[in-house]
Amino acid sequence: DDGRALLFARSQVVVASAAAGLEPPLAAVSVEFRDTDAFAADTVELRRLGFRGRACIHPAQVAPARDAFVPTSEAVQEAEEILEALAQATSGVGVDKNGRLIDEAVARSARRVVQYAQSRT
Image 1 (cartoon, rainbow, N blue to C red):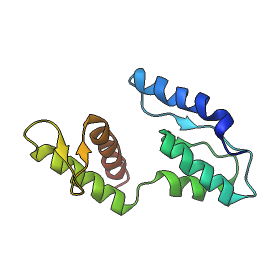
Image 2: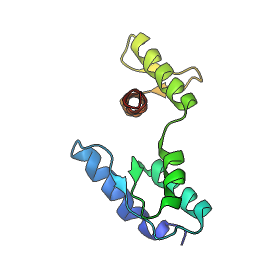
Image 3: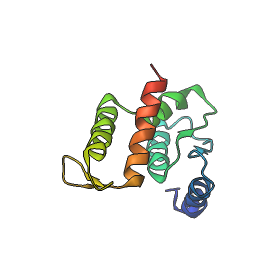
């Protein structure tokens, strides 16, 4: 019920996609369409695991899925700031405004956010 039973399999799908050089995968459908809060929480967790979207089987699932996967304007701004800080770094590794390391994995994630935002305009 809490998603742990599928955690290994879901993680393997995300890792296999990355290892193959593919875009992150879409998460599978959920039969839960009456409890939108549970669906939303599960969908946010799937985003954290590395999925890029979720298949929906009911109209009630669309808004929570969109809310989980469409980056907010704040997330886009943060991603742009991360990429700018990395561009200004002289060593290929940067530091964000909070003093956190910006490595290629962080940059790749930021690029995805910016690309998604650009594709929506």
